Image 1 (tube, helix red, strand yellow):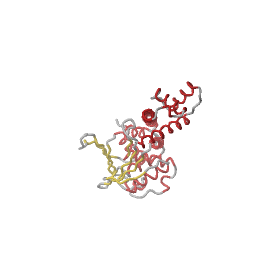
Image 2 (spheres, rainbow, N blue to C red):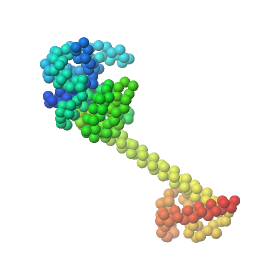
Image 3 (cartoon, rainbow, N blue to C red):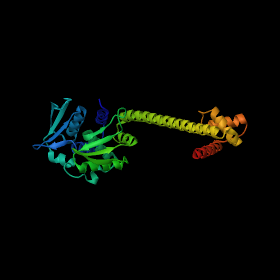
Length: 303
C-alpha cells in the first residue's frame, strides 16, 4: 500500500462535523466528478474513499446511489469503483458549490478550510513516501481556478504552495519537507505524521552527518595539500640556499613541518609550543609559513 493510500484511508477513518463533511464532499466532488446524462458520476480506485463518499451522500442528502465495480484498462488492472447519483441534483450542486467559484462564506473558519483540503486531497492529492524519494506534495487538478484556490488554502496555513501548468491540467505543489508535515497535521492524518516525521528526522540527521563528514574530509584534503606545498617550498629553500640562511624562527617551523608532515596547523603549533617551550599560535605559525612561501617564490623567480 502506498503512503498516499495510507493517508487517504486514515482521513476516511476519522469523524467530522456535518459542516466539515459538506466541505470535504465539496473539495472531493469539485475535483473528481462529472455530470453525465443528468447524473453525477464519481470514479476512484480507492475502495475506502468510495465508501466514505457514498456514506456521506447517504447521510447528508438521503439519496439512493448506484454503485458498480469495473476492471481498469491500465496495465495494473486495478479495480475502478463507480458511484452514480441521480436524485436531488439541484440541492447537491447548490450545497457543494459545484460549477461555481467558491464564495468566502462557504469556508468560513479554519476547520472548514481543512475539511475542503481533505476532500481535494482524497480526489487529486498525493505525497511521496519520504523513505523512497524526495519530499513532494501535489494536487493534480483540471482547472486553473481550482489549482489557484487550493494554493490559496494551503498558503492560508503558510505552506508555501505554488502552481504550475502540466500537460493534463494544473499542479498545485509543496516541496518543503517541514511544510508537508504541517499539511498532514492540517488534514488530521496523525498516524501518517508519526511515520513521516520519523523518516524526515532520520533523513535530516543522516544528511547532516554526511555534510559534516564531507566538510571534515574537505578540511583533511585541504590540510594535506597545504602541507605538500609547504614541503615543496622547504625542499626548494634547502636546495638553493640552505637552512643556515633562514631566520631561526622560520628554521624551527621548517624542522617541525618536515618532522610532522601530516598534522594540521593547529596540531603543529601545539607540538612546537610543547617541545620548544615557546608559545606559538596557529595564526603565528601560519604567518611564518607564509614567509617561507615568499622566500620560495622569490627563489623560483630567479630560476
